[in-house]
Structures are given as C-alpha cells and as structure tokens.
Amino acid sequence: MKTVCAAFRDYNDAEAAVHDLVKRGLQRDQISLIASDRTGEYARRAGLGAEVGPGVGTGAALGGAAGMILGIAALAIPGIGPIVAAGPLAAALTGAGIGAAAGGIVGALSDIGISKETADSYAEAVRRGGTVLAVRADGEDTAAAESVLERHGGLDIEKHVGEWRNQEWTGFDSGAADATAGDEGSPSEWGPRSRRAESELATGRRNVRVYDPEMSVAPDIADPELQREYELHYSRITSYDRFADAYRFGYTLATDSHYADRDWAEVEKQARTRFEQDSRGDWGKMKDAVRAGWNRVRGIAG
Image (cartoon, rainbow, N blue to C red; front, side):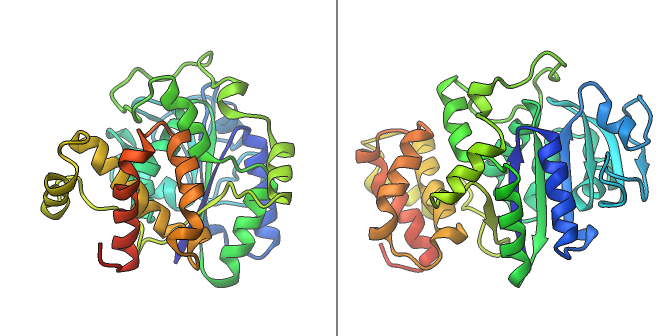
C-alpha cells in the first residue's frame, strides 16, 4: 500500500480535500491529518474543548467535516506546539506516548513509508502553521487521492524546503521552542493557495507526492558501502554529509512515482532544477552522486 501525501497552507483546503476523498469512496481509516492548532480552534470545532492535551476523542468529527475521519486527538508536540491529528497518524502519535516524544510526527510519517528526510520537511510545514494530509491507498484509489489533494491546493513541499534552506533552515528541530500563534509562515514561504495549485496541475506540474514503503527507505548515512563510495570518488571534492545528501536525493527521486517509467536521461534536467532549488550544493560536483543513488534503486551498476 502506498501513501499519498501533501502539505496545505490552509486547514480549510485540507478539510475540503477530506470531504472529496470520502465522496470518492475512500475509507475513513485510510485518511490521516495533522494540523497546527495554535489557537485551539480546530480542537474546539472537533468537540475536544479548548485545552490541548493527550486525550483522543474516539469517533469525534474532524472539525467541520463531520464523521469524515475517526479518532481525532489534540496534543502538543515538542518543537511545534499544539496540533490536532486524526486517523492512523493520530493513533500512532498517541498510542505509545510518541506524541510527547521528540520527533513524534517524523516517526509517525516514517512508519507509513515516508523517508526520514521528507518527514522532517512535513513536520516543519506543520510547525510553520500548515496542515499535512496523508492517504494510504492502492490501485485506482492512489490516483484518485493524488488528484483530490492536487485539486484542493496541496503544495510542492520540496519547493518550499528550498526556500527554507535559503533562510538557513537545516531540518526540523524537535528541541526548538514551540511555535507561537504569531509565528506563522508568511505567504512568501508558502505561496498562494488553491488557485496556484490548480494552474500548476493544468500545466502538468505535480505537487502531491506518492510514497511506496517498500522503496522509500533511503540508505543510512552510516552505511559502510556508502562510506566506501565516498572515499573512492568524492572525498577530495566535498564533505561526507554533502555527498550522502546528494546520494539520498537521487535515491528518493528514483522512488517517486512520477518518474517510475523514465530513465535518467529523461529526468536529469528536472533533477538538477530540484537539486539547485533545494540549495543542496554544486550540481556539477554532485550530479554523479545523485545518479549513483538513482542507480541503486533501479539496480543499475555504477
């Protein structure tokens, strides 16, 4: 089973997507949502009261989307502050006390097939006042979920990560002070809402990502094979962290469903654009490391 995931600048856009998903026939236990709730508004709308705590309202409605997602929780996450969560991700966050642990959102997303690096980005999106919607689906449901999330304003998380990196963001920090009600991401960080997403969809640009848990676990930075490759080919060019980041970028790119039937020659230009937008380093020096990560997934000898 795959995971279709998107970040939303506006909670109401995500809520509208939930309505549409259920209307399309997806089951409520396939849908998860995590939203920043600094004012407690969404918890109150769900009937959980104004206080944010670890309680779960089993069978509670998700805000105004009555009965759409079961099991909504209001809790506080280190480094983020108050959130509401619903669906399987809410169960993961509250079931074993993980919601109160460092990196709770990152761990929960990783459990449904999203790489640690990308889960970091979605956690940061929530920290900046956004909402993350994830749908577990197979077959035709995968395409349906992807279409719905695109249409309702799912944002290109990688584009925004590139902008955050330019502001010296290096990754989600669960040890940072919780965000406050006045610490919302600005329009320049998040971009306009649904109209932009709709125009990008019309021109073929894809914002929503599909993750396959059987393929999306990128190699560990401590992998001896990875370290040997660095020593042989890259130690005089760049640091090990930079090399490993480029390698994992290529690995993640190769697991993206949008590139499933394409070879490296077809995607290299887009890979370079995304790599440079994310401020990951000098493409000329790092492109071979990116391709090596791509080849590892595709089973191509380097």
